Length: 227
Image (cartoon, rainbow, N blue to C red; front, side):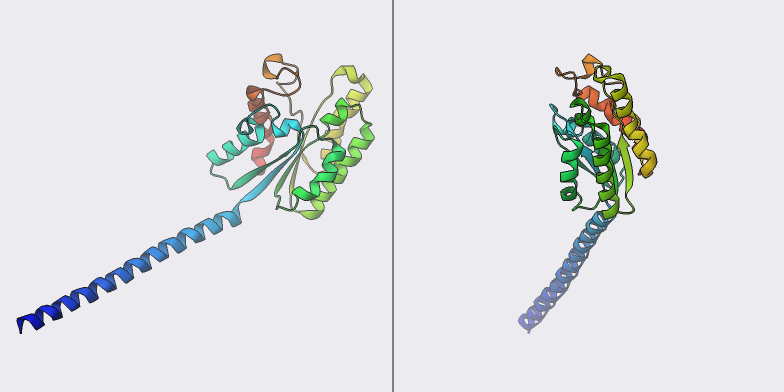
């Protein structure tokens, strides 16, 4: 008799334990589902910022983490803003080269587009009208693909040895395009860096890591209000 009672109690204990395990598994599954949902929501809310430019954007001669777009990402992350920076910089890129490359980069969603092209055109003395045409074509493609995109253009300047008229015409490219296309203008990307030896690499053109920190400041002043 006692043996039967013991067996009955043992069976009851097993049943309760099984029920408890099912409940715990159910709770675990709910937790996992909730985490997956949070991750999915974060990805849906996250927006992309595409920096499209030359070696200045690519971070020539620097570790990728030292390039100014990466420094912008650090600031965004510190503010817990849901933006992902995409570095679309390419060393040696001209406005014509950018025109041939932009469609590939636009395959991913773009919410803010930062255009940094033209410097290599200027250094090669290419016609200003040609640079304007190429940049406008790039802008048109971006707006056509993503009508609600926010547009930013980085101003650039040429040294006086390119000729006073050429330097002036080149400098005007960027504010003129900004006005025409309702873009936010970074007046001069290399402000407080260009022409300062200690902030540039041996070639005198590309900023050092310290120089890129200043570039990030120049960009952030304009970009922060768009986030």
